[in-house]
Length: 115
Length: 113
Image (cartoon, rainbow over all chains, first blue to last red; front, side):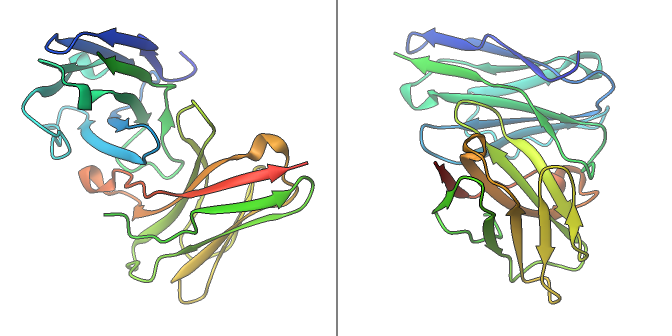
């Protein structure tokens, strides 16, 4: 597609449930990033995928968070046993290479609310 | 941690130039200055980037001081739709995993009629 697509746009879940968030990057983009943004806060880096290389998971806040990228395209961010502090907007971005000069294209995010 | 310092907020009159400053005194020689903005409820949007020369595109101009320790993003004729949080970021051009964007708190620009 023309842009980065994320689904669902909104997700309300009960504390303790697992959730999966999906990101469809721009076709051909090899780099994919996940960020999250809590209410009124800046963006927090979570994980980075580049081609077939091992992902950089250094930003994942706990082992309840995991992500995979199948076929070098679609990515899924999974949060297990959700907690209220996981409530945030989860943003995905892609670029055509590592550190592409023209910047990243962000999706509109998934707003996750844990009740 | 973000390597940049920005004022938390600024106001600008509609139709006037908005000049957003950024300090990056610890920038290294191979790091670029990037600007993004985030309009309410949207994902961040790339604006412009530069290394040491001044840059201009259809959205904005970027002025980088000769010592590269600070820069200014200029929106020449601000409109109400330019109201957003503006982020100044320094990063490697080809940084691989090190090239991920580190967002600070940015500057909330309010354009007023």
